Image: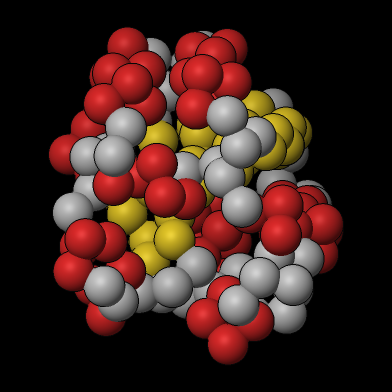
Length: 139
């Protein structure tokens, strides 16, 4: 059995209510259900974590580091966090960076990711499907 962590950063707990024109109307709980449905029959265990606190995200990455993979939507920390970058670099698990929106079509400051260079790959712009695509990439 493979073990994959899905780690979500700040404001993702507000999905469904926060700027639905950009992020859609699906809640994080609905996205979780979609990931579990995609994992069904693939012999994959999924662990979910969400925090608005950078240090908690660092700890979650470190704790998931021995797993078979990590799906990470670091939210706004994507563009600012050397701490998350260092945590990703320190673990053996491959990390797929995920974004609901196409960050390259948004504000210029969102075009820079502190994380992409140390991730296995990046999936951006497919809404909630970005998570399912990341799961498939890791499998």
